[in-house]
Image (cartoon, rainbow, N blue to C red; front, top):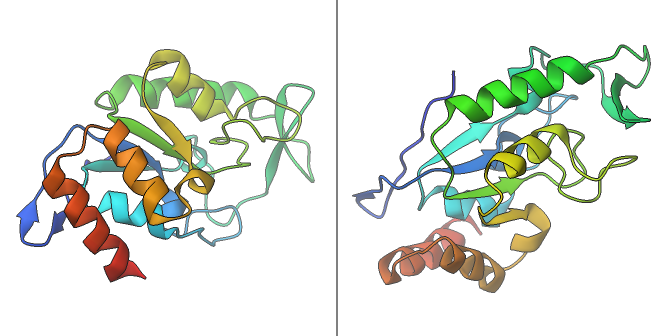
Length: 178
């Protein structure tokens, strides 16, 4: 079960509709190799908006570290053993989407077999991104590459309906994390 993270930044606890964020982008060591892909823009937004830190591969029962997975002919397979995780991936993704509060926005890890938006090898989208966007097609969505500088991060925050105070604090969070 996912816990909603309500940030406290600049003396203000912000309870907002949640962002759904790929956990590895927040610096959590959840990737297949035990690593993370911490990202300044993503972490800045997480200091301003309530959020869920989501790793779909952990949700489907895979551990850390774990064998790497990839798409082959519309099947999600372990790269070495070719063990098929397709049905487990989609059923756990649907279960998670049905359990979480509807998202304010979605921030996904690019190129991920679970979270990639458009640059997933041999597939249009990762299984969790596909499931989430099918359920919430109007949610603002980006991958970390679209949050490469403060201007792009502020622009995404505006799409989320950020207040002037949130935008000001987002700039402070960006500087704090630099």
